[in-house]
Image 1 (cartoon, rainbow, N blue to C red):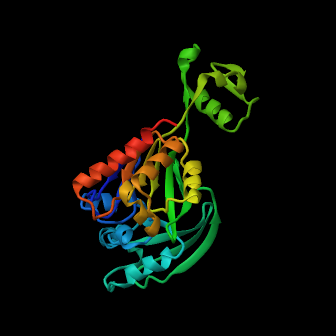
Image 2: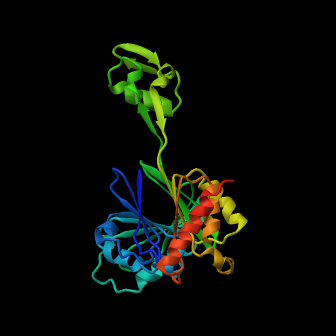
Length: 317
């Protein structure tokens, strides 16, 4: 399961922390104002996912740098095309004469499309931009526990929306047979994953064909979290969102304006409450959460905005 926490005040710039049960690291989405983000949470962050570098999504990256220098680890940063130079510019704004090269490595992955990214590295103290490779992969980040895919949306500039998906787990149900657990359980799971139907599985000195034991296995679908930030309320964006985040468990989605201000949404390439709610419903998202509101709104207006969002989401087709 994922735990997703908005670390910024609702009337301020956006920053979201994602944590995974029984997983060592944290994952940070956008770097706006984040008063609730602790030094320990920053230092335990393995990757930072930036939707785009408008000031309200990127201004707090300096605090990330401040608390990560010296941890002697590789940190992955994902974002749209051009972000590597912007990360470099942030780093070059300070003097680093007391820092050793091994203090940290930033690996920047620039999204060129939903399945292609260019890799750069930055090392102290000179922070030279070292181009590494162009990678074709459906996932911008992947580890043993989960994977992160991305889709590019239009906000008059490209912005990146991210989906975190736990990997499916194969569980054994021994109540369906009179077998004792043992090494054969792993052998059976491996055969199932690789679809090696005729592999021989040894249980208590008896050999079974793997496919004859598959009835003992259950595939458990993992949790999923989507982060959808600034995007124009356009059909092209909505089609991408509906496709990429279909049936996602939890999605935090930009809902910048009240419905009465949707002309500002159209003008400024932002979404508004009703439209975000409709798109979340059409994508069959289980638990949509409206976030990232215009700073011009009072707390009471933000409550109204949320109500408009959920009314649209719960509206029957």
